[in-house]
Image 1 (cartoon, rainbow over the protein chains, first blue to last red):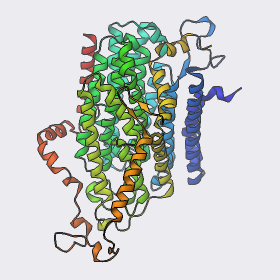
Image 2 (image 1 turned 60 degrees about the horizontal axis):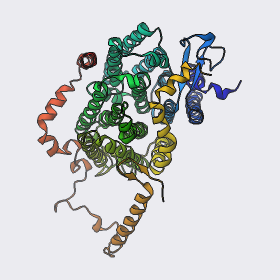
Image 3 (image 1 turned 180 degrees about the vertical axis):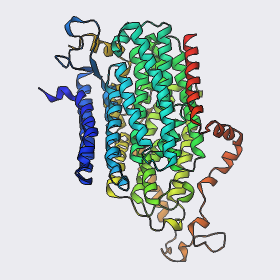
Image 4 (image 1 turned 120 degrees about the vertical axis):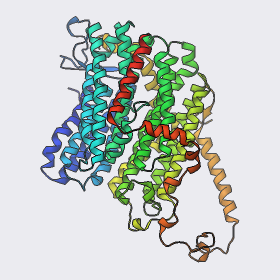
Length: 521
Length: 112
C-alpha cells in the first residue's frame, strides 16, 4: 500500500486523531500535550503541502472512502457515485495548504498565549476539530459531507469563541455565532435536500453533470449563496465576525480566518463547479459583486472608528472578503462569454484567489499581533496603548509588514492581488475599482492609526514594564511573515505555480465532473 | 528581462520596484548625511518641543488617543456613522433576521 495514494484521507485523519488524542496526551502533562499540539499541526501542514504537490503534478483526482479501490468512483457499473468521495484539484489543495499553515501558526502562537488558562486539553481537541472541519469542507466532493464538515467546524468554533467562559462578552459572541450559523446550516441542508430530491445524488460532480436550471435549482443556489456568504462574513450578514473574532483567543482567530475562507471556497465551488454555465442570468454574479462592494466599504468604514484592536481587525476581515467576492464575482460574470473571460474574467479570478491566499496569511498575522499586544500590555483598547515599538521590536516589525500588505502598499503581496482585481474589474465598470481603491486608502488610514496609537508616541506609565512576547509566539507570527514576504518577493512564481493552476481548476467544470463521473479510473 | 505579472492592462515587476526603492534610499541617506554634524544624542537636542512648555512626565498626559484619530473624518460623516452603528446593534435576533431577509431577497431574485 502506497501511503502517497491516501494523502486526501490522511490530511483529514491526522488532525482528527489529534483532536481525540489531545485529552489522552493531556493526562501526561503540559509538555506532552504541547508536543502533540505542534506535532499534529506540523504533520497536517506537511501532508497538505504534499497533497498540493500531487494535485499540481496529476491534476484533479478523487479518493473514495469505503470502496474496494480508493479510486473507484463508480463501482459495479453504477451510474451515480454513492460513497464518500474526496475530490482534490489545485484549488482545493491550495485551500488545504493555506488553512493548515494558518492552523500551524495559530498552534505555535497558542503554546504560550494559552498557558495561563485551564481546560487546555479541550482547547487542543476543539482546535483540531476545527482544523478537520475546515480541511473537510475544502477536500470533499460531496455536498452532504460538505454540510457535515461545515457543522463540525461550526460546533468547534462555538466552543473556541466562548472558550474564555468567565468573560460574558465571549459567551455572548459564541451564542450569536451559534444562532446565526445554525440558521445558515439549515439553509445549506435544505439546498442539499433539494438536490437530492431532484437528482438522487449529493455528489457535486454528479449534480453538476445532471443539473438543469429549474425552480428547485434556483432556490438551492439562493440558499447556498446566502448561507455561505454569511459564513465568510459578507455584508449584510457580517455582524457575527467582530464579536467572534475579537473574543476568540488570538491563535483561534488566526484559524477562524482560514475557516471563513473554506466557506468562501464552498461558495465558489458551488457557483463554478456545480452550476458553471448553467448559472442562468447575471443575478447571482451581480449579487456577489454588490456584496463584495458593500463588504469592502462598510467593513473598512466601521474599522476606522474602532478602538478595540481586534474588533478593528475583524471589520477589516469583512472588508478584505469584499475584494475576494468582487474578483470572483466578476470572473463568474464573464464565465459565459469566452472573450470576456480571456480579456478580464480569468485575471479577476486569479486576483480573487491570490487575494484569498494573501488575506488569510496577513490577516492571520495581524490577529496574532493583536493577541501579542493583548498578552504583553493586558489590553486590546488602543486608547490604553502607546509607545510599544521599543519594548516589542519584533512584533512591531511583523505588524508593519502585515499592515503594509493589507493596505496594498508595493511591493507587498496585497498590492499584487489588488492590482489584478482593480484592472480586471475596471473592464466591467469603472465604479468597481474606485470603491476598491477608496477602501484601500481607508485601510491604510486605519492601520496608520493602529501603528501610531499602539506602537509610536509616548509609552503609558502603565506599560513601563512591558516586554517582547515569548519566542514561540514570535515564531507563530514569523511563520506567517515568512509566507507574506515570500509571496511579495516572488509574485511571478506564485502566480505561475500556485494561483494560475488553482484558477484553471476552478473554471474547468468539465474536468471536475469527469474525474468522478468518468469512474475515477 | 525580469519576469512580470501581466494584468491584461498593465504589469507588475517587483524587481524594478526594489531597484527603484534602493536608488531612492541612497538619495535619502545622502541627503540625511548632509545634515548638522554637531548633533549629539542624549543631550538637550533630543528634548521634545512641547509648544515651549515642560513635557508631562506621564506618557498618557500628552499622547493622542485612538478615539481622537480622524476626528474630522468621522465628524463630517456623523450621519452615516449614526446609521451604521445603529445597524450594528449587537442584538442576535436582528443579525439572524438579516440573514433570513437576505435569503428571502436572494430567493426572490433567483426565482423571478
